[in-house]
Image 1 (cartoon, rainbow, N blue to C red):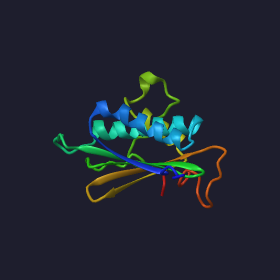
Image 2 (image 1 turned 90 degrees about the vertical axis):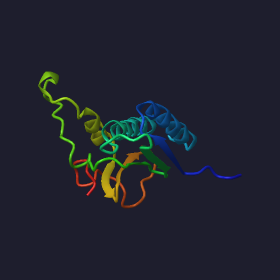
Image 3 (image 1 turned 180 degrees about the vertical axis):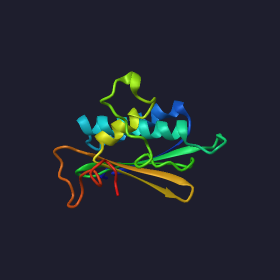
Amino acid sequence: MASRPAEERWTTPADPARVAPLVEEAAVFLERRGVGGRALHVAQLVLEEIVSNAVRHGGTAERRDDDTVRVTVRVDDGHVHLVVEDEGAPFDPVRDAPLTDVGRPLAERAEGGLGLHLVRSLVADWSYERVGAVNRVRLTVDRPGRPAPEGVGGRGDGDGRAG
């Protein structure tokens, strides 16, 4: 019997209407690879947030009809690995996104930033790199109860940032 691929890739137009179907396709792939429970939920949530940000805030200075977002999802014994790429203006959400003070009353907080705060708090690790004209965000979601490969785990330098 042929084994199911442990990695899948999608390219979708940078269109808000395409975010939910993309996340659903990724969820179906993950479920078929045996990912469920918290790991599935977290993977869906962080994928939706990062792709939505790329669609809403990314893109070229003049939004073009051919702007795309590329997503790669890979599963191993201990983790779900997500990679989101777009060709928008450089933006490092790991280092440049403002930290949200969730202890302050809602009325006193600046608008926005909660999505990346959630991402930061839910993933095992994440990183950003600019490769040529491409923004690349890598995220790692733990699969509880699964063995972690040696040397893998943690939150980068301790604050959710890889580095």
